[in-house]
Length: 79
Image 1 (spheres, rainbow, N blue to C red):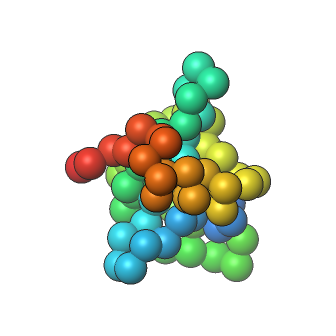
Image 2 (image 1 turned 120 degrees about the vertical axis):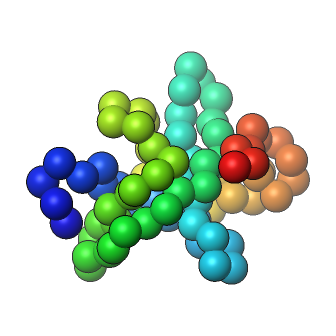
Image 3 (image 1 turned 135 degrees about the vertical axis):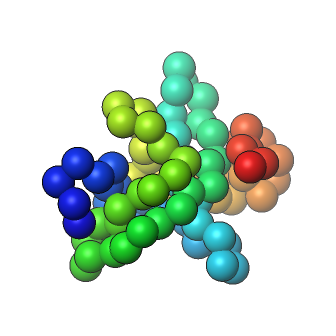
């Protein structure tokens, strides 16, 4: 992983088929975002697209947010 790279804990990734997502918290709401992952280590993933520096990525309870997303209860990024 590069020093200047945006990284997230591997547990933050939500894989759906060949696509990968993270959940970003902003002002008490959660958004499911499609991300492009460059590479992974045993504990982290390097993100190329989909998350900006300083954004709050959910790392615990992802399975709950995934369930809510499937019910249409979360904002979903359609890019």
